[in-house]
Length: 288
Image (tube, rainbow, N blue to C red; front, side, top):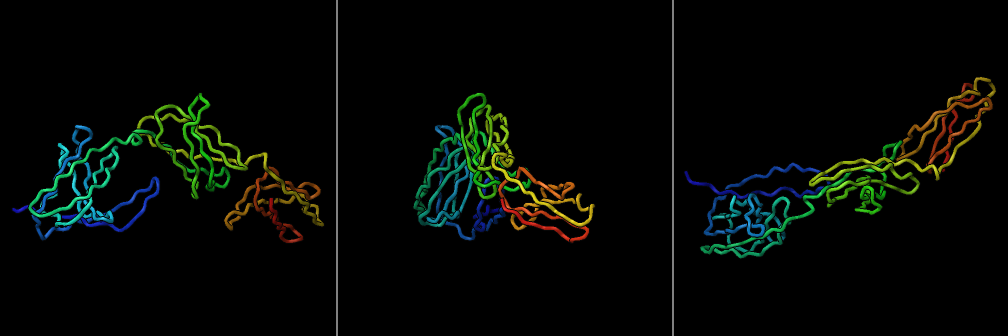
């Protein structure tokens, strides 16, 4: 039985964000034409061969046309499947830095030899901390929060990061050791310090919760009066308006004079609602 040759079809264009995965199905298409071409080479790290390194042949626009893997001796081979022409070739291997592309001109009846010497990527062996910064009450993302990573028992900063439009952050390239993680943002209390121990290749998810700072608060007060004595004990509901949604924050009952007070409120837009026996609905909007 003759051995068939195949080339790898390409996927649609896609993008990835930190922490995302993408399932991609590629098809192998049979090469119906054999070419009298050979591309052979070896992938090393120093003097040591690298097994299962991925070798890609691309066009000048970096579109992948052919791929293969190195064997236990670091050797790879493209035989009779690549037509003559000008290409780029790249090697990549987990925990190593991807090689710079090499330009190759493939001609028939002349083997093309390519060698790669990959360098270790130190950051791949180090730790990563990632997660989302959220508000304590609403659970909404906090954008542009500053996240600090400090060495434990030492007043020295190791790394920092800023949360994105979804409240996400990532700190990487962390050396093994013990650290304190903390976040802060304007008008919020600094988050409680979080102790974290990092070992090689750790990838640790940590969500951080921020509370509104009591130093920047306001209050809402008003008097609800009605002709009946029962209306001196009216349940009053406080809502905060966020993204066109009303989020219930607190409930109170008016005193004998119909007074209610909501305190320790952060900046925002609020609504106060109540149902009165004789006067229908009570509703007022406040901006702090």
